[in-house]
Length: 495
Ligand code: 8BR
Ligand code: GLC
Image (tube, rainbow, N blue to C red; front, side, top):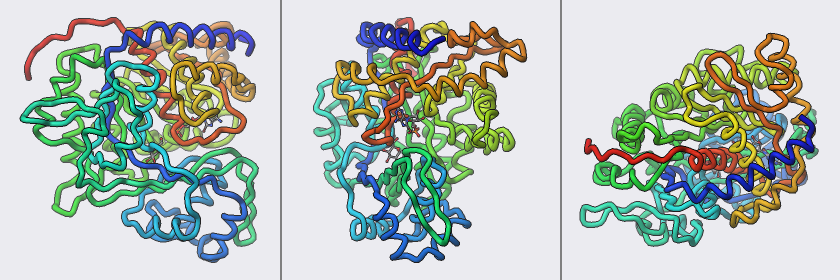
């Protein structure tokens, strides 16, 4: 299909979803919210930091590929890797030394709402979704200030043995400290020189230095957990993220198994006996492979209906599930990578027993959906188109403040490079007789055992920031689907 035709479909999808979002009864969003200290780094700042630490030291550390940040050399090694590859990464740090070093040597430009759950909660509240119930296990006063002032945004708190919903600014724990992450954004075309090697950044992206204070737990009080079923009737689905914060071992001898089991129980409580309750997990960069695997095979598998992830995250997921070759091929920059991405999506759908896998890449989205999903392919395609226009709005202005801002994203053109990249996948599917060229160009394909929905996406030339765009894409598509889901009366069986 020509780009002009896609543009028409975009407008139609956005106006269609606009008329339906009011049908969403509510969404539960948990767990991670933090403050993002944003820094757009410049070439001369990179060179200054390299000069302070010494090129040779950094070069050696790049070869070691640190998976935690323990000192400034680890930080610079991961920053240069991210810039060299143009890839997003999130790397944990367990003390405040790096924060202090960055404050002394770099200083941030601005602070804003961070964390997948925090970003998604504000976005959904601003889009006017009724009843956005956002739960953060470590809600501090400072953190609460970053939630938008909107009456439809609520946080659960326990009062006199009852679960009550209050705005986060009225629900924080005064004793709680804030969690502050550093987001170091870099731009395409920047050059980095280190130890005789020169890199040119291939695309805009960022490195996240994720602070993991010792008190972080992906959990809720036993009392709140017991009352979770009280909110079930007010929601049609849940968006869950932040599981990457789970540690293998804790000081008191508890292991990740405890928190994985608790996470699963929360999902089951939310679902209750409602077979239509939708549960989306937004994946992310997870350095620890034991945790990455446990999240996929123990939390996502069987319990979750929908998974959202970017290209690197698909490769990382495939890697721990035993598909190393496919994972490698996804991140290879050649014409097969889009075919591997599609095959990887199918693997994830089957292996993790999901109903929907939504992959967002720069220029196109690929979504595979099981045949037993309650909605038809046209509904799925509309949801993807809506989510791409939403992402383009966020990339253009930084924060979507109301549905009316969508007109900004709609004006962003469909990315012709992404439209072209899809041709390789088309050739592959047509050659194998899986679909006709016409089916492919239409964006919806019925394959044995699943449906495939593909759209070329809108890409903003100079984005305000790249952090959080993936969250907007996944949350946007998920709520558009919730709006289209049949509404049933939820049974009232007490567990
Ligand atoms: P993550 O946050 O999960 O990595 O997702 C980022 C997503 O943002 C990418 O998959 C891509 O689709 C989208 N994106 C990026 Br990066 N830059 C963009 C831009 N300039 N305009 C629109 N979307 C963008
Ligand atoms: C992760 C990071 C957070 C960032 C978010 C964006 O959750 O920890 O700092 O805001 O990703 O998606």
